Image (cartoon, rainbow, N blue to C red; front, side, top):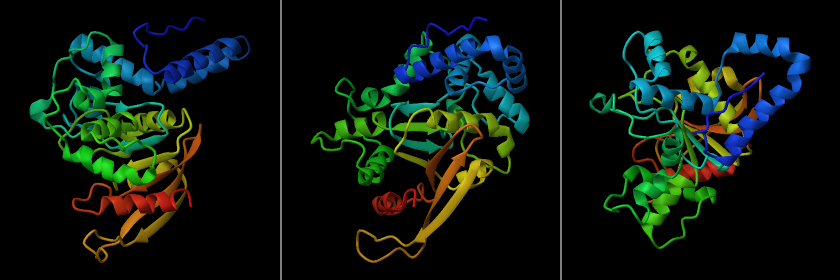
Length: 300
């Protein structure tokens, strides 16, 4: 039984090692469990996170269309997601700090872009060092994203990323490249409505992301947005909600209550602790104070 690994797949060392170990493990046991393994593979027919990314890149490069995105749109019954430019992650895949967002926000005017990457490794490295490309010394350094600045304010209380530089662009670079930001669905759309995009349509994407998170030890895993309260229901073993008011910079407390949910994820294959941050995206929220509460209550 031979197993092929695409030679273009020269990305994260730990990610590749995981694939090699899986393949070696399958070769070692196939003399004993060959029939069982083949039956399970035939029945499941799933790809893991890196394989899904690799397939999307190959489809996009060859035909301009990611077949997985097209199949998802077919299930929904409309062209809901962009079928090009898959965006799985930015940052360090082995970081111990993980943020999970729903999907890239992308207007339809930016859809169906052609693939300008030569090989998969170039595509992978672009996203792995996205902060360096946008804010590094070789960038034009003419833009400071409000979203990235917000992320610095949010992540600073966790004490996991170096924001000590006097060079603001270096801090902006670090906030992207020293964490691991995953998109649950790697295809862009102007909006998202889980009444239209049923969670059952997303099962393979959800499991891939959860298994990718569990691939190595993480210190913090945060699902950003209230939509995850619905999407993760089948995978939540335990949960505990915490509600609180936040202190405002100008003094006093917020009128509304903010919430975080400590969860234990169980995919049937792996388990890990995480937090859902339903109010992460609220405009004008005291985001530093919100992060401080997450740090205080994480895993409690």
